[in-house]
Length: 184
Image (tube, rainbow, N blue to C red; front, side):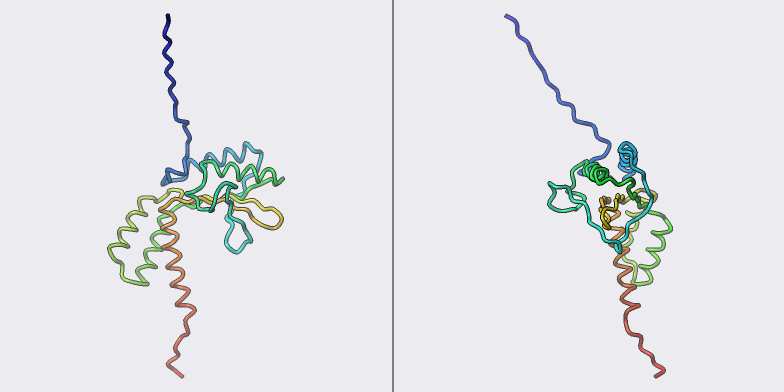
């Protein structure tokens, strides 16, 4: 009588990027996207699709919301495959790096608006740790007059955007407010 012991070991699949991990730098994902775009035979056009262009934000069929943290790990691959099946020849590709000049300018704008407090100091110190890193990626393709978009961002870049937008909104409020003319 023979006993055979079988031991099955499962090895985790090794992926270079996992959305659930929310990395602080999207450089590896950018490289993966660039390679996949080339593998599909698509051209890559460097550009950014702004809010003034009619667009639809990608949401995979099994997703409820297009929030990046709820995306499947390779949702961007499905997006690119849909682009390819739409018979387009190129995708628009954009990366957003956190630059020191941009962060310095944001800090100056904030101090011009209000007094710089400990919370602001902490937020800017955290953001400075990410200088030179890719915080946001955008893929897009045109189809029937609409740009279809896939976007993913890091948490720190979302914080940066919110801060920048709040300062921009404050500046818009000042520009839109009526000016009292004392000379009348």
